[in-house]
Length: 284
Image 1: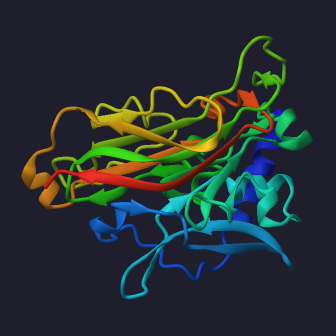
Image 2 (image 1 turned 90 degrees about the horizontal axis):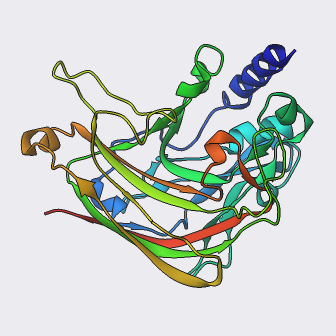
């Protein structure tokens, strides 16, 4: 029964993500555009007439749009497609530190999600893309992290607000007494081409453990706060080969999530993370 439900969810997801996308699906955006990320650019992906979810993108000085951000909204549309953007796990919130910000909220995945052993859906946003074509053959590979860069990330800073949900539950929807949900913000930099020039893509099952990782950063603590609070993280690890960097043989991602263990379907419904005015410092 559970296997049948998973297959149904995967098949629905392929249909939900197969619509024409007016934003350029190009991950080779100019690296300098990653230095300041303010979440002012977004559009609505329609799921039903007058309903849909927000999709963030970056825009160049020439007006070109680059679809480098992805979230779990397409999956959430399976559970309930007839809702406004603000009712999805990830959306553009108008009350940012300056203009809009990204808001991520952990939600229930409904009865279908519970039956499939995935009772919650954490709000998330990451640099990368979602590959719906893998939904049936290899679901863990649907999340494809990263954008190619020709410079090495050193530090990331920004501003956040965080309110954890009231009740923390495990993947079986069982309450874990005394445990409080946590937000998660991290970055990963890795060698994305092998010796033959073949692309190396990291997914949800190896984004923090792949042997191709050069360096990574994570905010050690994100205490609950209803005021805009600054966060900062520094990349630790090795350094990339200069020639590999020059040939854009390295990739970089930033990941934001309203529940730190959301990928294991653990967290608290209602946990809310807002992020704005993110700055990425790269080596010269």
